[in-house]
Image (tube, rainbow, N blue to C red; front, side, top):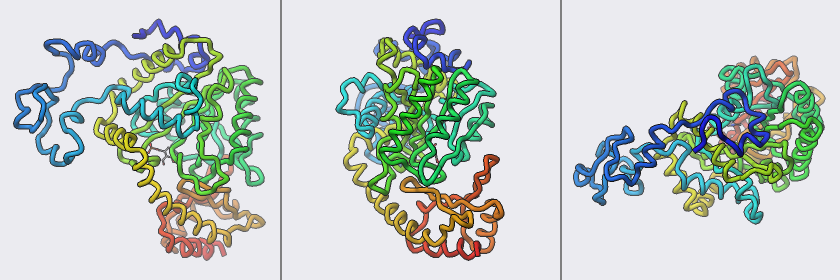
Length: 452
Ligand SMILES: Cc1ncc(COP(=O)(O)O)c(C=O)c1O
């Protein structure tokens, strides 16, 4: 068990160098869960604070004679026969159900095309379960950014990043230009990363593909170029580059040319100063938004020369300390449901494909109908999009996005999200993911009518 002064493996990696004060300080003390684990097989276990015993097994319709965590009997009826109430009534382990964590790691290796690489198993950490991708982003920023430090984002980014980075954690956001000539502006990203790296002990870069709000996913060559630029920047600045990869929309790609693998696959073990952190979860990927199951997974470098098993344990302890002091642990029933989906993954993917097919149709209808709005000479243009849930229509400065979205709603009864930032982004995000095909052309006609 790691203690405050140990973390031998972790201390010898750039992860520790990149940590914020919080990241350095936090650890999981040997508390109730530790002692409960030790006492699991003791004759009498008087450790954990959940009411437990075998006296009510018959009343609760529990088949075994073993002690169970007591539950309110009618929860069984609500859950149905597929889920054993005596299992999910108890606390889940702090870092998540071990089987779920192992299966999600397997799923990551598969999604990333890393399964055939035998060393990949030890080069990625055991995912830690948190309450959704939002929570994963929150913790990761907290582990690396001190108040006043800068997190680098593409200038088209999910609004909640501001709430997390700025309002909750007191760090700053800086941005680079997202697109140039219809492609990801790799040079702008690298330039800004190096600029930040010159004045800060590390770079913290947060990227998101398929992207919210634009729906953009790079193709394979672009993804490779992004990874290469990150490695290049790390080489130049010789400081840790933490790359937070928000994969909330992983799996939703509608164009064969778009890269299906996460940027994580392109960054694991590519440079000793590059620390990729994959943030993903069941919310969108398994269409279980309300389940609040997200994961934080680190990529390691084989060149760190540390015991990677120990590193995984060190990291697990620190991340567990953060979870224990906030959420304490995640929802047991949600984790079990996600585990069951993973156990029957072929079926889950087949079922999810039904949804993706609907989204694909909407995407195609939207692309077709959207052409008529595209007027770059007037400053009205779509950002490139090929995945995720959204498309983004840029507007000229003369049409402030907030006013436009309000008018769209009041006069045309069409709800969209305006994005207007200090960095000069001005446009509306349209969630075609929630529009039936029949509504798409009429919705875009409403926008065209207002733009006239
Ligand atoms: C880019 C991005 N990341 C993360 C999330 C949140 O995911 P979760 O619901 O798992 O917290 C969203 C949800 O809208 C998102 O758009």
